Image (cartoon, rainbow, N blue to C red; front, side, top):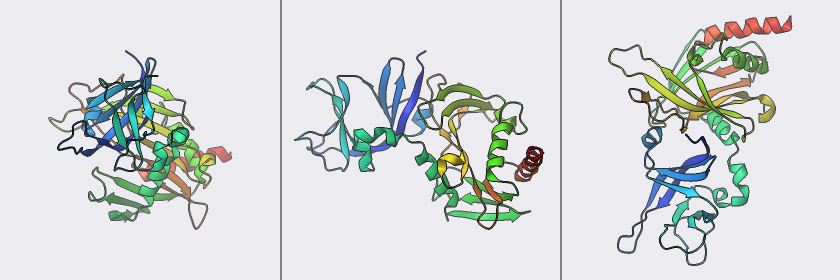
Length: 304
């Protein structure tokens, strides 16, 4: 089986292929640029569930004769920030796709490397955590648990926040060690399979797969495929660090019969210096008090 990895993915608005009374429709689609040993391909999906089952509404193999280009004279579209994806030379037998992106940079091919910058995901995660939309908060023993309303997010979202009396970098180092196989917090990751290491990004990312049984009668087991990245503080320049992850698709792991594929939106945790002292605040969905105790013990060992 050919090994593939996702280079870029996200929402765009695509022009329909058929015109009604001379008018075409523009519809929102999830698009994915994939690269493998045999070249690159572009796919689009009508809904997110189609990604987990790997059922694109359309797929195009990209090469020297079929590629992305800027619009030419006579190809003006009403939508902003459009580009064309189609045959380089006139070929009426092959369709040309017209795509509108949310920001002008997505049409500037010279800035394509900048678009792949993973810190856009990190910045968005920080914005979600700092958002004022968290409701139904409950605080106990210094730990605050909040939920995000479904009016602001279509998936279940929980935030846990508290303080640990150690420097953020110490907590970051400890969590990296503790989540590895054999670590103090490895239980959710013991069956994890690393499918691919993405070395084109800075810092490097990993695509991982795991299966989980559900302790409920008649409930199907779950599986999940994630792209995950650790963000050290020397890259953020503001003292924050942590981990960011999101659901992705990998050609080695198609939909598994008998399993329900879990789709995770942008998630992870952020470590940052406390505003009033050298303490640390953490957003991590787990037993916070247990982690706090373990990090403090690790800090004492490091200090000798």
